[in-house]
Length: 87
Image (cartoon, rainbow, N blue to C red):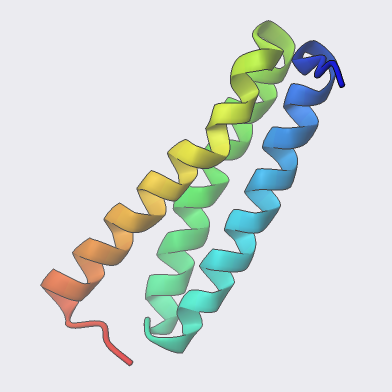
């Protein structure tokens, strides 16, 4: 199977951001409403990046969900340490 990331890269990136949306929404289990909103704002910042990379470098668009995951981990770490988010 030959993977053509020039064509499928943006779709893989978009699917990955939808998975990240699921992770963001699931933070409602331990984060306050404003923490979930913060997660949504941070995730929304990756949408223009995905659109830009989809046009310019479609192969690199596959990495956007991984970057969004790293940001999700960072926001969670900040919330747990600074604001005592917990179950």
